[in-house]
Length: 359
Length: 174
Image 1 (cartoon, rainbow over the protein chains, first blue to last red):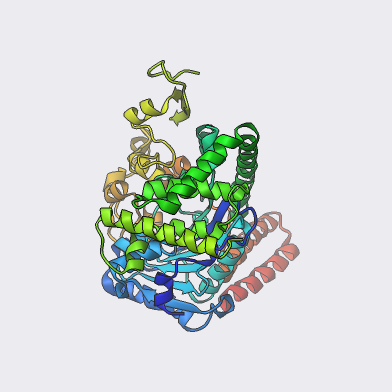
Image 2 (cartoon, chains in turn cyan, purple):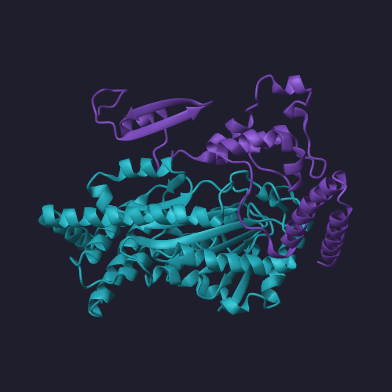
């Protein structure tokens, strides 16, 4: 697989929706932060030091040590245009930090895009596993094995008392950030979301929008992750997130059922209005697109819309991002032009879905 | 419950702040929260631990350093990467793994506030961690050894000494 397909195809494995509980959980992600002992962290490294770290870490993939997890391709960030970087961020394959601020940054990507290993991000090594649906424990198992493979040939900065040492004190200890991306339109429509989100924060979890820290919760998508990395084992951290997410899934399903039972016509009206708008509108900004896509996705999950498949909705979420749109149409666009192109792309996608009969 | 700021809209956001052990609760509506700059989860002005972090890092327990005659935190500097504690508290980032040792004495209150804990209990590196596990065992055996010697149990002590030597050889082999 070449760099080309990573930036041109919108559909990564995590978007195909073949996982448990995909009606509520879009994806599950584990990220582990590691550093090499004896090297300054990327922020203070000289270019030469950063280069050495990149060579040492990318050699692990080059020497075939990761082969049991599929072919990997190493991409240096300096080989990518600004637009290509943006596309990889929109697909969640690299972090905004790696895309915009890294020196000698690189990423090793597995061919199904479920594993991405970033080099010279805020820390020397960031191992990410991204799975469709609710598979947080599975993601940890794989991430931990990849971690072991790197540890066989590199000396990590590890301290008995503080654990894995990271550039930011918020990651020290286990260095793990586990998160689930949840679609919660039921809780939003029944106005329970704020109560639930504040409860989540009280048990040491953080809530963010779809593109991470500081991003807005567009399209009723919420990313829930652990905040604490020190003083709890990885197992406890993941179990905590898992059980909270499990409860949210049940609340969300109950809220959807209630909506169906108590205000079916209003719900159908909302879903089909959005479907109509997406099918026919000529101008669509990203905020509206996110909201309408969320409505239709809810309709699909409740069986109110049958001619569109859920993965098309996942794909469109990514396709309609500014970077991806420009990649698809191969031109640089003003925001106004993007809104027109976005509407065009959505119309075409929905048209081809209904032509093929959906699911 | 009505918003305690405007007394008009229903309170939808409920915060509990614990500062220096003092608990304060807020019940406010979304628009008042925005005005006050209290973050709303998942929005752009969202509460983030990073934004609070640099505030936390300035935290210096009053009185205790003078009593102990320790260096004020602001003069600390990592002798490996050159980062000063002041720079660290501005950026909220360490410069290298050695900073953890150099700023060691100041980190406990920070880590306690961020994580509620100061000590790692999770994964240990498989390869390099073998040494940590062996060293822990040796330390324990050495304590036992001293105890046996004090009690003049020389036979038991000899057994322990052999075991320690064996483990030390193992460490050298790893």
